[in-house]
Amino acid sequence: MLSNQQLKKILGKLDIIPPQEFEKFSTEAEKSGKTLENYLIEKKIITSNSLYESAAGYFKIPFINLKDQVIRKDVLFNIPEPIATTHQIVAFAADDKEIKIATLDPENIEIFEFIRKKTNLKPVIYLTSPDSLNETIKQYHKSLKAEFKDLADENPDTGDENLKKMAENLPIVRIVDTLLEYAIFEGASDIHIEPEEKDVIARYRVDGILRTVMTLPKNVQPGIIARIKILANLKVDEHRLPQDGRFKISAKEYKVSFRVSIIPTFDGEKIVMRLLTEKAQVLTLEQLGLQPSALETIKRNISKPHGMILVTGPTGSGKTTTLYTVLNILNTPEVNIMTIEDPIEYRMPRVNQSQVNPKIGYTFAAGLRAFLRQDPNIIMVGEIRDQETAEIAIHAAMTGHLVLSTLHTNDAVTTLPRLSDMGVPAFLVASTTNIIIAQRLVRKICPNCIQSYKLDKQTIAELNQSLDLENIMKTLEEKKIIVNAKQGIEALLFYRGKGCKQCSNSGYKGRLGIYEVLEVTDEMSELILKKVSPAELKKQAEKQSMLTIIEDGFIKAKNGITTIEEIMRVTKE
Image 1 (cartoon, rainbow, N blue to C red):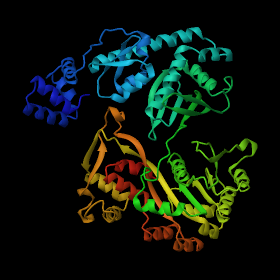
Image 2 (cartoon, helix red, strand yellow; image 1 turned 30 degrees about the vertical axis):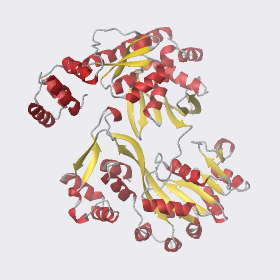
Image 3 (cartoon, rainbow, N blue to C red; image 1 turned 180 degrees about the vertical axis):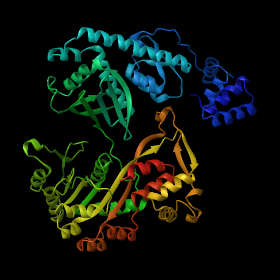
Image 4 (tube, rainbow, N blue to C red; image 1 turned 90 degrees about the vertical axis):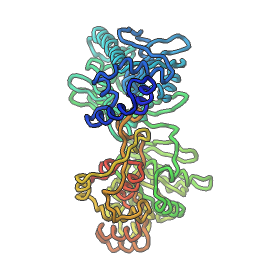
């Protein structure tokens, strides 16, 4: 879709619509809830073809009408179907030097660069109309359907030998390659391949949210599963038991490990692949999105020679990234750092990383015991899951080691009672814990389509039921985010993404942490020893000016980094 700004320039250049008329149409389109482009085409003020022909002149590129053009299969499949659909782009001709591309967005430089690297051909850009492009995209289904039909005719039985043969079939290889390559390009963290009764659904988790990218016919299911099993070095003939494996994909631009998990379900085997970028960029504490006061507290506590640093939050809230960021700061030639993880997600130079293996009895607790004989200064434990691990970790912190670990709790304050519930004596918790960081990940507003708005009365009433808005407003004033808290939240401007091609119409792109950082001061230690309730601990935390996760979230929402909806979504307990 062309933006209103682009439409104004294109139509102004052609003298089709005078400026005052243009404003009138813009208002009418907004009232009817339609885009201006669709409104103008529906009202027959301009046809789709003539609009895009004019747009081609505006962008100084040629126009192409692809209707009724049959495109060679090998040319079409240079751009995988999910990319063609999401980015509204198709290849329609190619030779040994160039590839001709029809698009609706000639300014999407990132995707043209991706195609250049993938095909080793120079992209030549043409503009086309949406109808013409949608007709061309249908050709993917026609050619894939024909190939799938041949597969089904060719492979009536699914014996093990036949599965191996099927896994090497070109359409199957192409589907799996496309799924993996496109997931890397989209920045997905997981790929789900889910068998249904009549088809197979492929979904990606991008920025923490799952979305469907492909629906495939049921007859390709055995081939896809066999292909992934072969890549991950798993048993092709095992269909009744869960299996785990991994494989790597390396290219000039990236090196990605895929961790594969397969489980049997009612309609067949379900596959989930976790993507781990091997050369993941280690962030700085500032890049994590910590507020200045929290940053100061963390820096002060990680420079202590012993004690415990705990990071808490649900699965997938970025705890490991925070721990690696801290480790990266501590990683100097003067110290011996040892980690025990499940699994090892990033490789770090000069850090001795060890992977647990419960099958042979190598658990977190067993690894920790062995570590203490390895003369470590700093120990990282992937997760404290049981009493034994908690006790060894705390004793290590007492005997002069700096211990970093994660726990599953909802906020920083409830971490202290949780350790006591695990059977760790209160005096040990009080004397060894330095700092607790609780966190969640929120999606960031797409900078390309950000817009401001004010909260309506209904939203404010709903927020008031679950939050202390008065307190949040006071915090915003204290942190100099707003000038006067008495104005009320209804006076404030907040932000959200409208949805555009760059963010796949979600309004979000990328993620950032929201945090609460609790320092275990002498006063806090005394309260832990007295075994007071979490509510009492919370009061003390407030006295210490600890920002809660919600308050940190509201600061980021007010600053246009994320939305209030995101804060509410990730902090629901």
